Image (cartoon, rainbow, N blue to C red; front, side):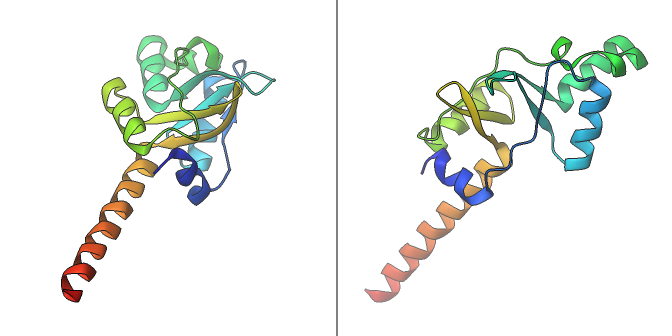
Length: 143
């Protein structure tokens, strides 16, 4: 199974922000959308970085209340690992585990086309295991 399947199942909605927005604006957007990270995009749709709850907590620990007025660009993770629609779910799981992050932007031709979270990956893997389990049960009962 590939990332394309995950995106097809979850829909094409992407919540993103721009590098010049403030952390305060990012926090409110995260809370409003009930999500854990925002992809930070340049005007051309390319990925500039990602700002997660962890990044915001680090900024607050370092700067206190002054962090709220800081631009997202100052605290985002700029070295972002991305994948493609054709990337396998297993490969994305490996990336997340090795990199210790929970969100992977999906890019095609240098542009953001989706975002895969650890929750999306787990949901997909559970569905695949359940389908395999059911297929084995059906096979056993037919024999």
